[in-house]
Figure 1 (cartoon, rainbow, N blue to C red):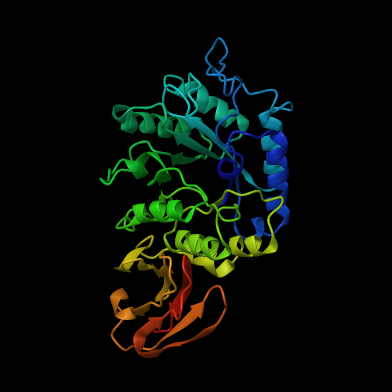
Figure 2 (figure 1 turned 45 degrees about the horizontal axis):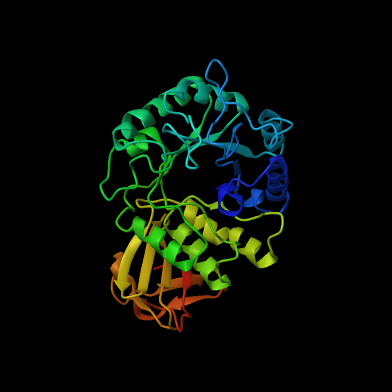
Length: 362
């Protein structure tokens, strides 16, 4: 759980963005419910957007002094002083996504040492400049370097081989999270496209290893409130990383309420035997569910279409005996009550919206 600069700022940032968003996370209630990582994305290096990333004579990447006049280590110290953690960014290939080069290929040892010296607690490793043949050995090298450093580093694999339809056992051996999708944006089409990369991937995720359909767009201008609630609900029920991607310093109360809903977050964080998966689909109507400890389930009823619809979902599809009476708790309205005859009914669901329940006491 945390925040990343990319979705809102892209490469248009300076150090004040990170100081301000870290301060906001520490004081607005997000830290209190579990958000901890402050992540920088592309553009931190000297020579950003010139085509030439600047390294010194021994191969160590130089920091962009215009963006970070006080240096990244001082910024990381500030983040740590708030009780938060720092996430850094690089590309495994020969160039970064904006074609600045060289990126980390051939400089893995220098870059791993640099990020550890910064005090990084997480590193996102992109793949814009890499080739298919590099993925497995390159990610194994990064994992080895961080393990040998003695510093705990959460490794985020972004597009280095693990987003394909095939599954590779090496993915969780060299990373804690791996992108399953293309880059997200704040449109409903993008949210649904990235969500659907998680179909039949529920078995792959678990404690310390997570499918990653990319970071959250909740609070960015392209989504309606209903879409933002559905987006967050679906990321929670699939155990996806909850990495905010908006401007934390200016978000409204409704957005903050989405990000800090403790019951939604508890569904994301708890684990039994699956990270969550799609369990029913009927055209643009879908049901996603996650088994939870204590004989509970997180269930999202989703209307992905453009017309108001209703969904009825028999809990027998979760392995609960037919006609068993369970209790339902609506995470967003806080309403609770029985599930009559074991059939969960959404009632009218507006377009691009979802209901999010905890099912218990069956």
